Length: 281
Image (cartoon, rainbow, N blue to C red):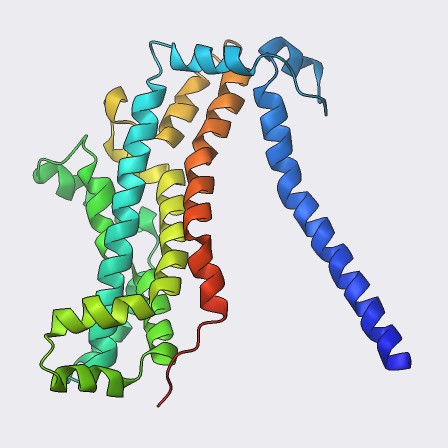
């Protein structure tokens, strides 16, 4: 009886903690949506739990602002984030597969080198990166935001760890005996096994690229090439006293919609990853 009571109390506490954490996570989204439905004048009056009547008006104001290409900015962010997620997950998985399956003399050196890059801040290499893309003629374009995603040490390490626990070498050797090519093995056998890991990292990479402000602000100058974070920053304008806070909240609300959609599309693979049973040697 005592053990049952203890389990019940532990279950109640766990559920209360989860409810509290869920509330803290969702509360800020609720406030964002509420603020997006209010006018700038209403926002200046203070906080309110009740929604306003200006959502469509705010959307029209943002969409019809000639100095603010909202649709183009969302399109740019979708292109950049999608390409980054695809390139990052595929090539990081390919690199992890190569280091995991093949044995060569500099294997440990290559792994250590990749891990060393992981601790290097982006700001340290910013000026060299800017000079490089300028000399290559890629300044003020979306390519510098996409191409570097091919090399991602953090995603590589995650994929490498996942392969260690989920991919037996005997499976690769069996495919080689059946005369399957190396890229065939990777694309037809390894990638399906790594779907849960790829889904998780695709979400993280997409969100990270979508919210990235530093690099786009460094290399993008034209308004028609700006991504969502830069456009949201420009909404505030040069004059602190002359900006529409309702526009800012509305744009932020619109900006999180693609992230939510990506999560909903890939969440089934994350759930599948919890119960995925890899073949062990």
